[in-house]
Length: 226
Image (tube, rainbow, N blue to C red):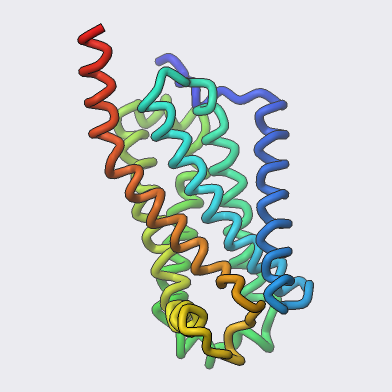
């Protein structure tokens, strides 16, 4: 069985993906600092979580771009971006559960047990995708089963959205839109909450993904006419 292009990665592609991941963490953490949250391991942990979802959105966008065009090389970045996203998710979960006992105690998780459940389900799903993102898994499972499993990425992304929505983030979004000063939500003038920006990114990526069949059909018709 021939190894698909998205499972073949060079050191340069890994290095570029690592740089993209690091820049994402710096951007998310820096944005939180602009909103008034001082830099700390806690804010860095939030930056890991936000960046992991941005990386998933990026690899989804890359897939849509390549399917709607004749490009194929960008597909080679999907695997390393996905693996770095899973690593950041794992680090975020570990710090949240075991390193911040004063912030994340059992009483806290008892209040937000649904968010915890969605987050752990998404984490386990992405870990499974991580463990099968290798040639040996592709060959053992077969191309059809392997692709079907990795299409579950969209389910994991939805669970991730439910995870942060159940932490009452939408209430912070409403306060920001209405200009209300909320002590619970760290504010930075008119700068939107990072979770709100991320949610808009999820919506935009979902819309583009849903419109992809129409674009591909139009492209097929244009190619046939040519």
